[in-house]
Image 1: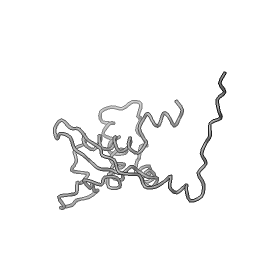
Image 2: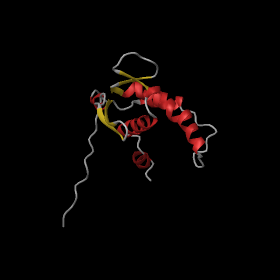
Image 3: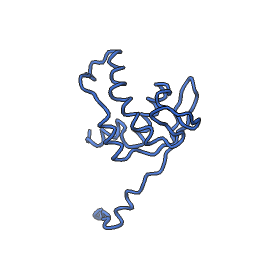
Image 4: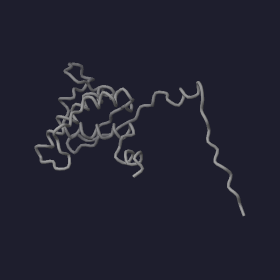
Length: 143
């Protein structure tokens, strides 16, 4: 008969705690498009400041997400996704740099010039890289 030893849980304390929260490393995100091919974006995951600003920017009042028509889909994009992208992309996209505004710098992408399909895929992948995928949300809720 074997007996199991109790699980030892490491306790981190003092200055060691800061080491747990060092800046996350960047991640490569490949956005696949039938029209434009594969596009590589280097991004850093979102932090608490970006989460908060994204939440402030999104306005979903008056939109019933359970009964969306095609017109409602445009409302969701304009009221929720696009304002969130205007916060997330400039804060997270390292290469190429994505800005909310106009630039003549060839190394910078302007959000308003990016096709919606590219924006949506990039948005989704940044959310996943930041721990905000649907699966992770269900795991947090223990569903």
